[in-house]
Image (cartoon, rainbow, N blue to C red; front, side, top):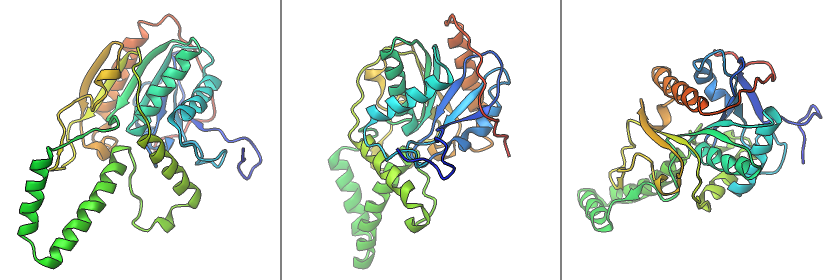
Length: 293
């Protein structure tokens, strides 16, 4: 295991909002995300509840990148238990972070700990969205190609390939920060590549956990894909009490300032309601709170 330059062990968890005696909420980011993305959301969840975010495994150079979702869940579950030793636990994950929240819940339950609620925020299951039937896709592309010059046809085909890569990145929560990857530190590139590999090989198994699934109101503008499932492919494996509702924005704009208030209201109400089913409320004290800018 590597350590940061200070020589002190790296902490993946970050206190985003100090709170009172309610159970903490733990937030997991999408690929290329970081805990600071959720400061504004945390600030709107109420002063009575601590909120923690997480750095992605490996981004602090505390360990090598991890390529298995199960192993990521083990590491994050240990991080969660270092903050809150006993359940019930309340977990939220955005995009690929929803996969992490779901599997961290499984890991915690394997240790006999109760889960209060898992909130999955616009998190596609592997294989979602479904592509348009092949005949329709082919017809659409042929129609587009016939309307183009030879030079434009080559550009069109190249664009289709590039768009496919960007769509996958977008669905797992990655915001491209620059076209030139040289601007991304090499260790972050390795972490992102490992997480894409983990997602590509992930097969979710059923889990009896109470869940809230939040879906962005504006689906991606992909003419050859079918967005017809508000649970984004997760329905068959969510075996506990399940709720679903929409939140304003598109996948990459959910956390924009104009959309956060409604998102925060959905999350706050769901966690409060789920907590009423729990018998235990544990206060937690952690590092200094990050204040919204």
